Length: 212
Image 1 (cartoon, one colour):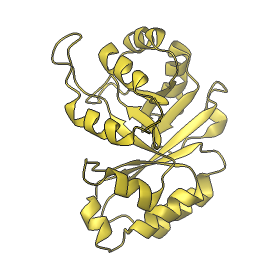
Image 2 (tube, helix red, strand yellow):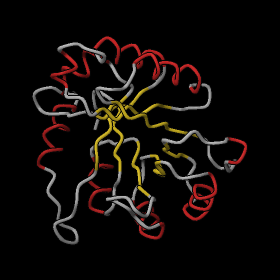
Image 3 (cartoon, rainbow, N blue to C red):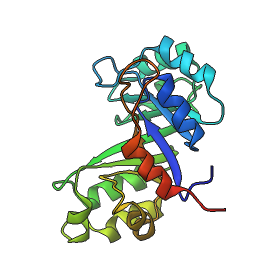
């Protein structure tokens, strides 16, 4: 399936999730390995899911974990892409890590200039940034510290995934106005083994489909 933007899925924790998102064209599928995370998955379960899937690149999500934890984890699951919010010491990171996705939280108190500086300082070793935005799209459109133009500037500075309050009403406008490298959606929870509801995300996926 061809999509209008690149699709990254975070915090997959079931095979149902993995199969669904791989089938709709997700290029990255992430697993949250922090044990206190809401959608934590064990290394063993992640490996089982990865063995069933072909196509997506797998991402280990580590939030603020240190280099020791990350190195032990990627050794166990054999992946080369990590997602982190920490300022890691690259000299202490396993050479198995080939790509780093840097998560940056953005709220109304966040400084655009400060985040632009992070981009400039860290883009040489960061594959993509992921902006985890807790500001509504309506507020972004209305101006203030965070504007459409500010987000577009960041996306032009370095490849950037957006995580926002995507809806059927705003998704295509966001893609057109900001032109991100891709978007990040979160996996769902199984009702029971093998049964999962994808109604909300399916509506977004259908908007992303390119008609051929």
